[in-house]
Length: 142
Image (cartoon, rainbow, N blue to C red):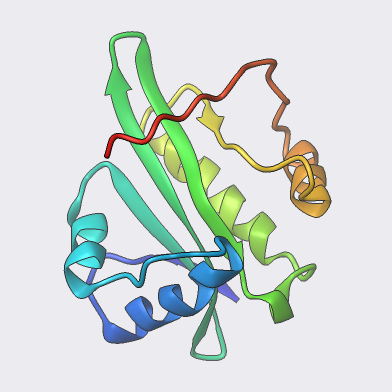
């Protein structure tokens, strides 16, 4: 298995993401070519994919941005193909994201996960993430 950053558009990447996203969200929108191009062409987002035997089995997006208090990084949309879970794919993706965030000058890496995702929560703790006491708020804008 290898972890690669997607820097060029390919239908295979878009199709793999569209296969993975339903495992992350119950009502995902299908990713279009233009949307994937927007992600991979941005200097703020880094799409990482786990590849094995010429197929993509996991992905995450690392978002790195500057704010007045410093450079921040977030892991978003981490998902591993159901048949590949428990084999180290998620760990490898997160470790690569941490290395990239460090190289890009981030002071820390944040992520969120649902408390019911026990395996994910255990993985993040093993990788050195510490649960923060905070409230996450969301407001839809439309």
